[in-house]
Length: 247
Image 1 (cartoon, rainbow, N blue to C red):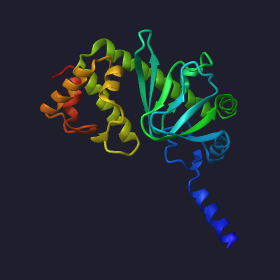
Image 2 (image 1 turned 60 degrees about the horizontal axis):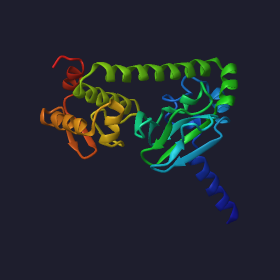
Image 3 (image 1 turned 120 degrees about the horizontal axis):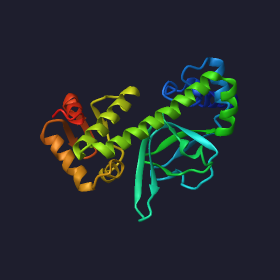
């Protein structure tokens, strides 16, 4: 009886193991292009797998940086506190993406990371990741690509805020989410927004009323169907044309 219970426990533990080598998000995260042996070495780096409840902080601005975090499931936002006391949303991150890169340069986090739904992350100690990256050039190369992608994304947000009208900003935001959901095997045309309209406005540099009006106009013109936080994109090409100033 005891042996049977132990066997069942071993099978259960094996089934829920969340190491990089059997993670279905490995192509979206750091282990892209690694051999099985290299993946096993990276598995050993995962010091903690944590569940973060909705509304909880993964880390806070000013906290000492010692790890980066791969999102295994769930959704996060990052924000900073402005001088006038308002929170400014700086990004939204989903499964297969990394959090914590903001702390590399100063060794302290420069923003807050907050779960928008119950989530799970893998914690990767940065010092050990650096050491392993020097030994596995594929890992080092991919980590540089990840950092470059974050820089490009930041530049994209700057372009949004600097050159686009409100409706163009929202169109670009929805298309970006669509592409990211598609990369994870989900529908490109139908998804659930984890963030509030107010958080979208903070990220896009728009007032809540402006975001709400833009959503209503998109629905009236047949670009999308909206039911609370549930979004269905009806006209992808129309949104692309709007974003590219062709409408």
